[in-house]
Image 1 (spheres, rainbow, N blue to C red):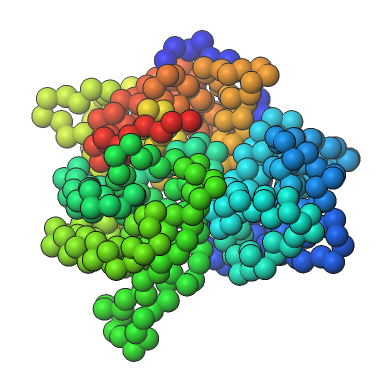
Image 2: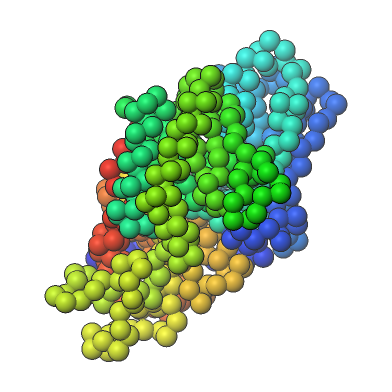
Length: 484
């Protein structure tokens, strides 16, 4: 990467929303989603999400009579009213609306559309696109009962827009694991896939441990995001089958549910067998057969037995506690030296008094050259890795501010009106942002606001080499690329 980057300046509005998906203390005030059944014939259902007083965003899903909509194709419209922006997305008979009063720049229109489409696809996961036929037969059809009890699913998805890069990168992230451990998990999943399972997915929270698909079957990252959100936000998947069991041996009940993968086939249901193997790790087996429950149950038993014997589940928990890549661990040289241990995951960090570090610009917080955070997306694999948050951005407010800055940078880089761009460099009072897009990867990096541009670019090159050095541990290699 050279220093011929385009330069621009953008500001950000800090908010109090916590990007941590595990922090439930703020959900009640920040990500409230309400489903309202209205009596007027022109509106059937509305869902809204409100944020704190310094800026709120309402999300509305409403159905209007067929005569008012365009049944052929989608339409998009942006309406401005003072500080408010209203974005309409028409998907057949379904109207999706985003109302924002956070004074978002025009480039955020792309982000709003991405988020509205994700909400629409989450609805399809529950209903399938065949719900359109119901409106064709009866324009006054009320889909509210069909979505009953799913408020928490949509609320969780809307909350993920404030912390999960997968919502705009269209990529998934893997739990860091030793290559042999991930291979062991993948081998047993492949065995069951060969026995008639369409997709076998092992996940820890929102991160993939391993996944396999039947021959010529590929799972889109958006479908994985929506499916994981559906499982993690639904308490029914976490219900215990024996309330009197000891904590160490508690077992959640197994579930078998019809679901639709909108990117795979928006018109048809698949059937998902879901069971938590421990408090964070769950297995999803997908099939086209509605009679496959007992076959999938046998597959789960085989998988769980192998995972326990090979210590995969214990390694998953260890990785969850250790975290992923830390900017403080960034190697000094792009290429490992003879006798030098590159800080692969689980190894000791490099010695900070190395002679090679004396000539570096180092702020004392974060990583070398004031590096605070980065997101690396492999375009071929449709996977991404994000570093852990260091001390300069360890508060929820700071993390969300950075996340929003990444979103705007992504929208700017991929704006079809002015781009796409290959590089971009931004500096404001909060940090320096640098983005680099090639045919192989996308890199988004945040630095100390006083970071030197040339040194920051050099550091980004080192980050890319570091990711390449540890790709066996942070990516699921051998995964089929997705067809868009």
